[in-house]
Length: 345
Figure 1: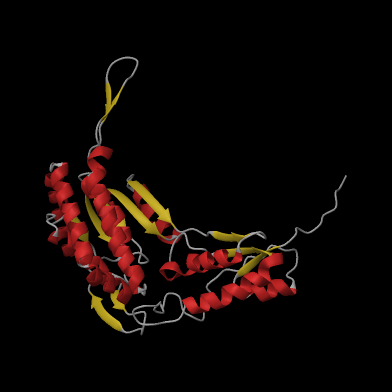
Figure 2: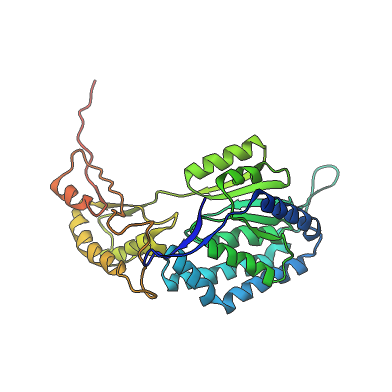
């Protein structure tokens, strides 16, 4: 597969990266497995020092990391800075709390003695999406590194610079080579990694098709997996809603993170009696939100072309009324009375 940075603002290709050869992949796997044997024996204090240093570096260089997000996936620069800050908070959270979370738990059985003990699993493999280039990596890496595991990550093909920057972050923070490894690999090589006996678990965040493929391969190898897939959330507006407040949050729910969020409002279902008023306020606010200014507003993303409808129409009525048809273009569904039905004996 191709790993390349394409600026969503102007469509220009910034950089193209070569994927790893099979020999380079084997070297990376060997390095990670070797690192695990040492990392698993480090103290929580030493792990926490590395993870906390990574958080401090993110905060110190927030604009440097944020600009890569904006250049590669089109996130507004203020939202990109917010993601960097959130990622730093995640790292700090686990640096401060992992020891307590993983402390042995003494049980009190009716007979004998029992204790729950947490131990590292080994080398873990993550497949991560492009919509949150750092946040997704932080929430996968931080708890696992603090638990004594090491991680290898295949990031999305359109955010390679973010992926490389996050790997360098860990090395600069003092993590040993192999503790965090970025893999620029093909889909076939993903299967090789999952099949490799040195990989003890797989985590995926992404779409259903990718999940089917990864979960099936992991199942063939009887390996632990976690799958986080997208949603299809509805934003429901009832007749007694405060429209000013509702429209404000409705636009945010759709447009936050350029609309690329698994919990974004993907369907709007509006009570029919307030549909006209809702649309009258919603349309101009959504248009204002979509204006483009290079570093302060929302860059246009080729993954969401501006002429493509960005809301899904969901109409609950027995037959589309003229009002329903007017709403459909904007993706607004109507809550209409259910069609009458006669009772049969």
